[in-house]
Amino acid sequence: MTLVELCEPLFQYVCRLNRSARLGASIAQGTVRAEIHAQFAQIREKAQQAPGMGEQYERVRLPLVYFVDFMIKESALPFARGWEELAFEEEKFAGDEDFFEILEQTLADQSAQATERLAVFYTCVGLGMAGIYIRQPEKLRSYMNEMWARLRPRFGGDDTTRICPEAYENVDTRVIWPTAARGIGFIVVALVGLVVGVLGANFYMYYSAAKGLKSALATIRDGARAVIGTPDAADPNGQTQGGEN
Image (cartoon, rainbow, N blue to C red; front, side, top):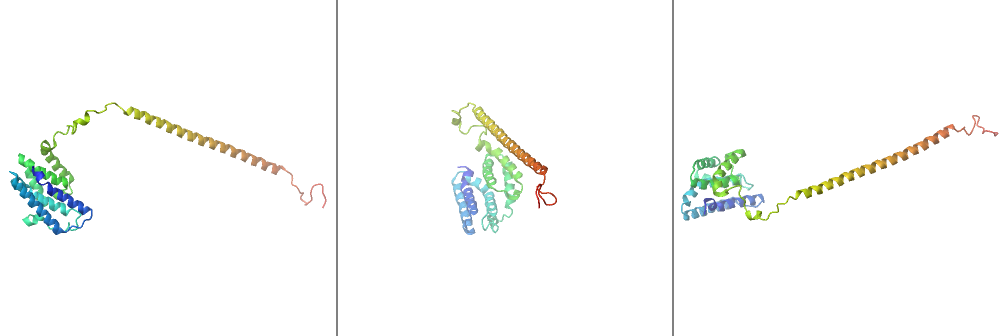
């Protein structure tokens, strides 16, 4: 069992707690406090049973306390703002800063034991521990990159290796995209033809309507001219032509 595996139940508990808070679950502060103390007690008991693990755990226990306090304070739990930090019980009042001071010391230590402890710090920061750098994501990213550079040989392996080589054994390497390209070309040609056809039909309809309108206007104009050129039906004296009063 590695150190980060030993601390895994605590990480899972914090994640479940935050998930419950987001879902609006009603959780009593006293219950949470008791469960966290129980988690730490169980981890310590397991650490003491594993050779060499007890000392390693004690060196990350306080950073874990700072992590739990920060995650609860920044959560959506109803008592988040009024949370009395667990670190206060040990007279530690600057956990958000102390966490990263211990991290710096661990990074400076090039031993294998320090690298194992870095896995715990890496998990804490990855889950949301920001501390005094809560407004400086670039600083947190820098810490993550520095830690991962130490952890990669142990946990990450080679980034260029294939995770599942068997998946590449029967891969169809034929180039199939030209068929798709031709299909797209046909669609484009069809759309262009459709647009041209619609425009042509609109032009023809406009031309026919305009021609009919011109013909109607000419008929009206000719009729008006004929009416103007016809003699009046009565003379100025009120008598009809060729007739008597």
